Image (cartoon, rainbow, N blue to C red; front, side, top):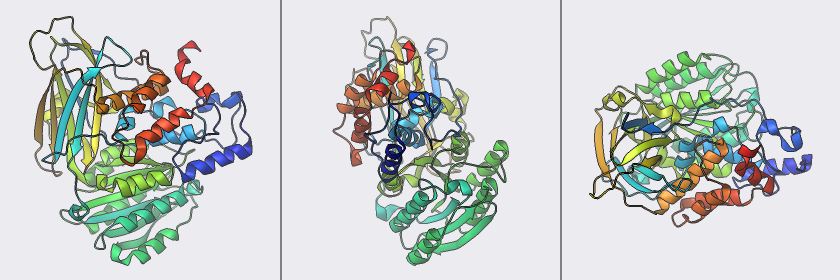
Length: 499
C-alpha cells in the first residue's frame, strides 16, 4: 500500500472542505490506528471520542413479541464517515450509527394529512436469503416558506483555540451567514460566543438588520479554552428572554465538541439541558472538524435538548442543513416513539438494525413523560428490522406485525397514536432497496456479526438500483463515494474476517 505524499494529502483535505465529494486520489484505507502503510499520516486527528456499543441482537418473538424505540432524526454519523473516507480512512466503528446513515437521506414517503404519517413494507433480506426485512417509514408534514413559524434563534459559537482551523470556525461562520440569508425579516437572532469566558456578542436582533448580524458573525476569531457548559446556560437564558409564543425557539450551537471548562460533568449538563427543553427551547448541535470531537457528549446533549445533531464537513453539507432542509429545524412531531408487535406465528425472531441507544422499554411507549425524538417539517425517518420467518404454512392473509407510533404535536400536550397493520407482500420498492443498501454498508463499516453475505458489490448494486428518487443527488453522492474506493479499501471492507 503506497504512502501518500504531504502535498497530495493537503490537496485532498482542501478538496474535502469545499465539496462533500469523495477525493479520487485519497489513499487506501484502514482505521486511524491502522494508518496507511502502517505509519501515521501527518495531520490526521486521533483525539475524537465515541461511545462504544454492540449491535442489537436477534430476539425470540415467542419470548418478547414487542419492540419499542425512539425515533432518531440525526445525520451526523453519515457526514463524519464521509469526511474520513475523503481522507482515505474508514471511520472508527463506534462512530457508525446505522440509523443516522438511513436518516441522512430523504425517502419517497407519502405526504401525511396530519402532523405525521407512517408506512411499512416487508421484502427480501439481501444478505441472508432465508430472512426478510421490515421497513418502517415516518414523515413529518411539509410546510411552505410562508408557513414557517417565526424564529427566535440563538447562535452559540465555540471560539476556543481548538476551533482555529479552516474546517472549523471559518466553515461555521459561513454556515451561519448562509442561514441568516434564508430567514424572514421578522425572525430574530442572538449571538453568544465562548472560549475562556462567555460573551453575548449580539443582542436579539431582527433579521431585517441582517448587516448588523453578519458583521458580528464575521468578526469572530478563535482563542482560549472552552467553557461550553456555562455558555449553554447563557444561551438558554437568552432564548427564554426573547421567547416567541408559538414560534421556533432554538439554540444553534457550533463547536468541535471539546468541553474542558465550565459544566463538564455529563449528568449535570444533561439535567440542565432537560430543564430548559421542558420550557420549549430546542437545541441543534452542529459539529465541525476532527481531533477534539466528543461525539458521545454531543449526541447525548442534543438528544436531551429536544434537538438534532449534524456534522458539517464541507460547504455542501451546510447548504443541505441550513438551506435545502431548513424546514427540518421546525419540529412538527415531538417525543416520537415507535412500537412494533410481531405475530409469533409469522415471525420467529427479529432484530432492530441500528437505534441501539434509542431502544426503550415497552412500558415507556404509553408514558407521555418519557422523552423521545423530534421530527422536523418534511423530514423522513426510516428504520429496518431483520426478521426470521417461522416454518408455518401461511394459508391465510394475516398481518405479520402491528406498527404503532406516538407523538405530540406540541411539547407539553398529550400524545396521539397512529397504528398500521403490516402484511407480507415481498416488496421490491426503491425505498426498501435503498435502505437495505445503506444498512449493509453500515454493517460492513462496523464489521457487524450480522452482515451475512453483504459485500461492497452488493451495497453498490442496491444503491445504484434505487436512484429514481434522489432529491439534490445525495444518493448518487454515496454511490460515487463507493465507486471511487481504492482496491485496498474494497478488500479491507470485504475481507476483515480473514485478517
